Length: 414
Image (cartoon, rainbow, N blue to C red; front, side, top):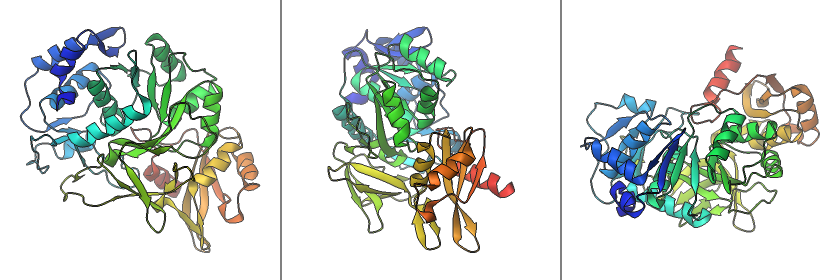
């Protein structure tokens, strides 16, 4: 596939900057020279990539030669075994096998094809468009699909990736965006929250800031927009090559949706409200398992608004059932955050002999007790927080998602 050919990228845009890392830059010609100097892999490439040039070159080398990448710490568990991936060298062979985040269950290897990535990149480009001066800030680890997708999009479009491997403190992030004239960025909500809390204003060059990987509250997005950040909530997962629904640039409505389905993706719902996805971006199957068929059941609950925009309502397996009533953790979290008295909130169900479960919360901020009391005024009786704890920070995985396992384990021990 020519779009995934590093040599073709160098021929198309030899002098265009491909990578920026610190005070050094690499053109597409430089990148092709680095790829050409590496031994051509002959099979799956097991890699735990960092946010550095060496890792980027290793990733692009594997992609160029059509060898699938098996990515991340969990990937090392399968290194050296007979390849179970049924790897083929055809036009739609495997591009990568990243692993799911493992926040709710054991990480699973996800077999993603080259064709799926091409479809995902085309859908993203249709939504955001490309400008000649575009530079995409990469803060997400390339072992995860969100970070890997930025590299693949840049390769296809012959555009620039700005690597930010330093501190994720808001001043350092702002300095990188300003100095390197970043136009597009991918953030997890935690990074957006830091920028908002420290009252940074958006760099003039920034035209789109995709926010995904975890739920972003309406209040957080509203506060970011007030500071000029062009935040676009997005929805996707490893199994869909990242985003399958995203707000369009300029859509700054104060609403809970994540935009319309991108490209040829089709979103429907099971009888219980579970989000089902069909389309060319879907994975082939899990590592060691059969090929997937039919619609992909995401495990997320959602609905469509009257304009065909997706509203994500939380994980199906995280729904709290208390006294026979269903409670969405996301609704309770939004109420807590909307008080302005806490910076972060994670809501979940705790076992209870009388009610089956009760609503519990882990809160970050100066006034957790006041936040619980204030949120109770807007929540229904069964949605109110019955147990809570204050913590300095929520435990998170390497991809920036809240580590549910760690929270439940710590609560039980505590």
